[in-house]
Image 1: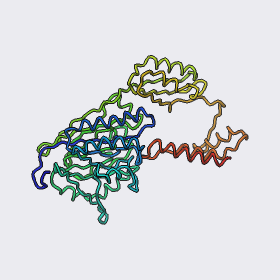
Image 2: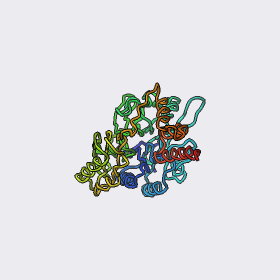
Image 3: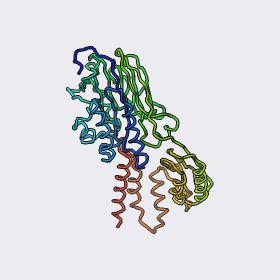
Image 4: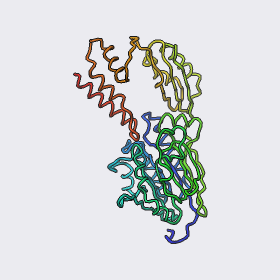
Length: 409
């Protein structure tokens, strides 16, 4: 072990983020996500330690089979002497700190970085020193809905800046000055709230690769998602490699090397439905599927437009998926697909709520009670809170909707 007071030598560390294990309901995509994590760790052979900047899991309490598989792989590296330093992401954070990240720390497999306490109104973070390399690591965990911004505002930055040595700041938040276009409307943390003078800022949460130098600060790096967590990430995989960074430190300077992680190629197939019947759309989709070289690929099928007759449910989506022979997975996006209103009802009102109320009344035609429609619609329209897993959110909404329907009996 390197003596604490000796001069730091050269070393290597890995920087991963946004792994989102357990993010998908499709077993094929869950498998690819786990595979990406395993391959990333296999590529960390030269690393002395590994930083995971949040969202290792897609929820605080992930599927146990997914967690077990990740732990088995991490334990192999831990037994080789590699250390894992982790902060909560917005997905694997829970207010009561009763989650899989805490469980893993209690076993000694990982070390949580975000350590600190309030002294008055100031939040004082503590450094963790990696015993083998002398690197000093501090950081901020995420909170749901970006609430960690309030804690950034309370940071005792002077104390962090006064520390000597090679310093790494780990965080899971967007930086206001370094947001990609698709996050322009989302608040980030201003750079002014970060402590200055760190040698490396290991970021997570932003699903885009960023590697920038900031005067007075240092290298601000986001690896982006290791694989994917949603449809947008999968689309991005068609054009961009996803992976992580290996960071080589020599003479106190950090040099980054992006390491792509290969899993499966992505094929995007689009089809317009406007002016077509459901039967016509089905035949066109089957034709596109037969013409697609889908073997071993993730196929993203995007269908949009308004049908001339029939409904989306008449297309037989299972048959369409099966027609993409050899595909690793076929994921259908038909959020832009609609059908004509069978009744031809036209409703006007001063607000969306008024229009909805009038529509319920018109469709009911006095044959059924429309009053329960409002609470049922409210439950079904609920937005998924940032940080909540999609599967858990859908199950929660379904349970609430069932309670509304149960009351009708």
